[in-house]
Image 1 (cartoon, rainbow, N blue to C red):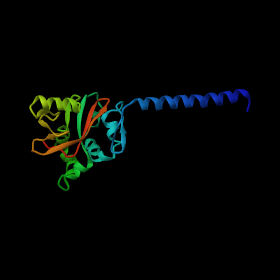
Image 2 (spheres, helix red, strand yellow):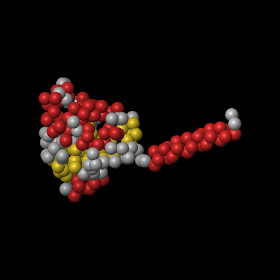
Image 3 (cartoon, rainbow, N blue to C red):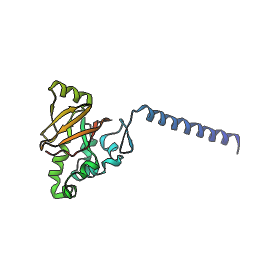
Image 4 (cartoon, helix red, strand yellow):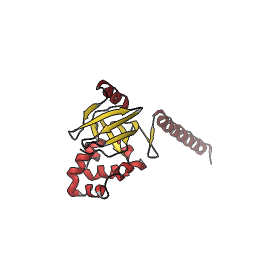
Length: 189
């Protein structure tokens, strides 16, 4: 190999290390939260992160079936109350399979948009609203109905229109277009 070739190869190696270091440094700057075994990056949108969570496969499939992927990739901001696969498993047998059928798209969309608040609300902001509301705070969902937030000890809970309660198990999973709070129960309008 001649001197010019050696310099070219050396330059390529140096550049590859420089670029890989830059990407790593950028990734390290982001404060990620682990959800479903995957890091959630604040620079990615709700859908880009959710598809990587092993705990949210049912939710992602439902969002796709309802045609809400493009919406949740949009600018937002949105606060998503994201039920886990275990939360969906608590529903009566056959419920999820029925909801994802094309003829039930309107009902599925209603349920999913009941899990979304317009705007970005951190757990701290929701706690402050609960405190200001003397122990509860009602917030309107994208679907149009209210959810009631309340606290018990150090935990944040949500009550749906049917009287069911969900616990926030992972709060403040920041996204480029909002925030996700992972919950343990599917909410019903």
